[in-house]
Amino acid sequence: MENQVYFTPNDVSHITEVTKRTLHYYHEIELLVPTYIASNGYRYYSSKDISKLQTIQFLRELNLSLADIQLYFSNSIEEKNIILENNYQCIVAQRDQLNKMIHFLNHHLVNHRKEEINMSKWNNDNIQNQYEKEAEMKYSHTPYYQAFKENQKRLNSTEKQQNNKKTMERLHLFFDKMNELFIANYKINHIQVKQAIFELKDILRTQVPNVDEQFLEYIASIYENDERFAKTINNKRHDNLNQYIADAIRNDI
Image (tube, rainbow, N blue to C red):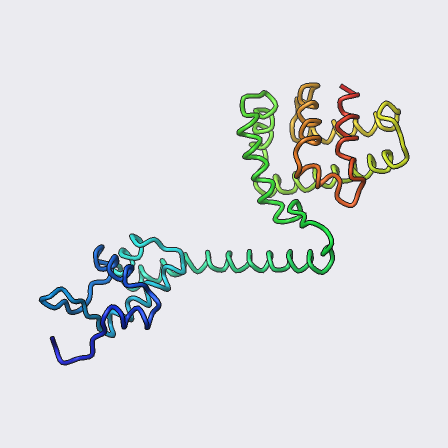
């Protein structure tokens, strides 16, 4: 052994909080090979090894895979910095997402502590994407979904966001109107209720041009049975508004 300071796996584990099992695995895949291996198989790490391990830990925090980290060490400085720059953007996005989450939770805890958290208000773009994926799984075989996709193809990303936002605004105005009618004890066959359902059809056609009775039954069923939609509809409105709207839709079919 050369005349310099070496560290045992126990020492390295204590310094870096990386388990001995992980150190052994890194050696096995040749990601971090100890500077000195004695004839009896004992492994000894140098300060340079510990420095490399700290870099590995940092890169793992950047969500790089072990395979990508191995490539990182074989790259030039310029290539390494390109990798860091790309992952820097990911970290910034994660930070922004965490800040949004903190703001969302703080708003809920300060203003709605006595209520269950309403996830329909969290990250509407993400919720919208989830709804679209569910719709594809459930209804991709239907002509309504095909019409929806064809309609979406005509729009760029910004236009889609604007269209979705406008549709949601119109839907909430519709929910508010139906809530007023429900509280005022208007029957589902009343002319004003029928006019409101006519407005709903017009809103739905901006997304699905071929709205018909079967599609309206799909919507009624979703409003009636999907807890997430029910919470969105009933939020700060009557607790049974979703059922009232579902009944009104079916009455108009």
